[in-house]
Image (cartoon, rainbow, N blue to C red; front, side, top):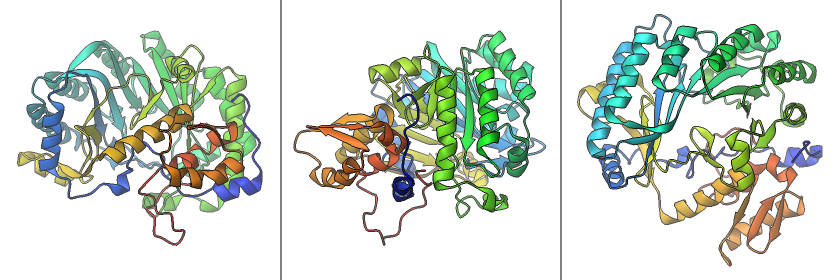
Length: 451
């Protein structure tokens, strides 16, 4: 796909429904609290027999203030007093997890997410790095990444992290327009962003990603076009262009947003189209559902070769089959199961103090789950999938209206999304979701809209 396809307003309205983003399958609402510490220990011990490298995710939940649009699991800590006790709890969790993994310590990926990991000062970053490397051994070419907020990140922190071996940054931007920033309670200038970007490149960070969000309150085509122009001048290696998920029933702080000024449906899709075409014209390649990369980036090459992969940390070519997740609310996948820690900080710390893994819920994958997960992942990453001949008859019947609307093409057992279908890839993927209610009147979990 070069320029964004033109979709009729009727088509957009019919397909603008609530659906999962499929960072996992089965999706989190399916997971059960019946999956607890005992089941997690069994999954870790199953995983201990493999010699494949691990991916490690550490959730740093702290922010100095709450951005009104935020959908992450965040704890506001203005004075930082909660951080040291939290890091001690993460260290204890790493010890317990490692005790069940035995000799399996190789790590090919590390991601520090949040929240804002750079709310940690240099001493605390060193303590966290020691926790990680005491229990896991980074490969020489490991992908070490973290998320940062330019407004709270200092050059000294970046220099320290680069010295540890971190080689990738993901930088929150969202939108440069002053009215939008005021509406979402996040002020960040172009100069602030350029200062951190230039320094990160100068000290050797190999890849920098910018996070942008379309569909925020007060965004207009002209203001959004100016933001994208600024992004193209700064020219990060990658761009994550996320659709704003307005879910005030799940994230009550979103009720502070001026909801009357939030674009929806065709107006929201027009913002994505505008950004897509400006980025493509500036030389970026469209990757997967909502990412962009420069042509020389490994994501672009993987997209061409059909090797793209996707997990909780986004699109990647470094496919570690299992992810160990540390920290409050963190989600991992190990030993054939998904697992999520408790979202409550006091409970997380108390359970670890008592020597228990802080598991809140999880899901052991069945053979059918694995097959459907592979199908959905191929669609979300590479926009095509080959089905087993004669399989998934009910799903193919449900796919027929999408084929009639020009979203997919079927050639035997191969399904390929068209350019229009790539825009609505979540709708296509949801056809293969065995847990999604099909009755229009049935209660559904809360998901963001597909447009």
